[in-house]
Length: 219
Image (cartoon, rainbow, N blue to C red; front, side, top):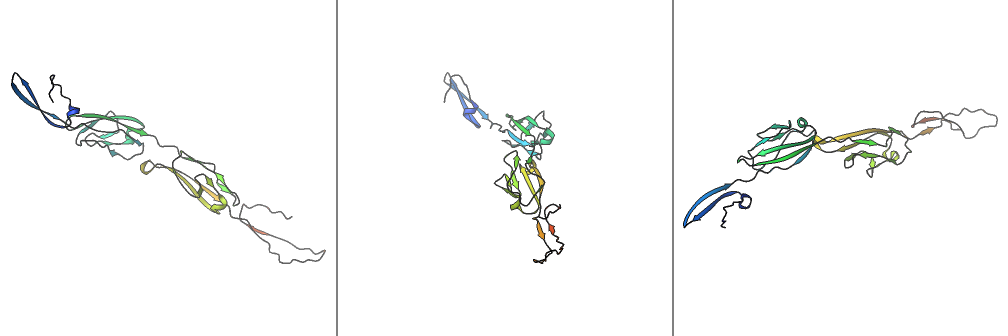
């Protein structure tokens, strides 16, 4: 398409070589204009313990620059979140043809993961205990019902470890708690006689196991 002003728009023309003609007083001349593909990089977010990674860029083969200490290798775009520190880091990428683009890498702090609502010891007869896991969205392991309930009687006696993990890979943060459920109380009476004479004295004893050692009363 002709243009009386000679204005050329590279973004409309697109990458490639474009031949332009100029005609005046019946004379025509031409020239070639090469439009290089734009540099393309995208913002990203990582956690502060993420392993060093190469930032994707198109076209490849360009150079990176940044004031951030997180840029470990300007030729490959290797970025280290730990070296960068928590915060927003701006990087500039220049393609082999000299076309620039900028991006931001956001380094997020690790979350504080917690489990609350649990004691360390329960009686075997205890039932539903409400447990809170923070922040939400993590993975629970252990004898937890419906993501929020610990039932000692269903879990059974012994030690139980409840773990909560948020994130994956290098960004995984876990918290755990060990809960002990006491054994059921079992009482053995080593006395077999069911009949005694009036005035007789009989020593009665009982042996108990399970629960917490304590005293026993005869009623």
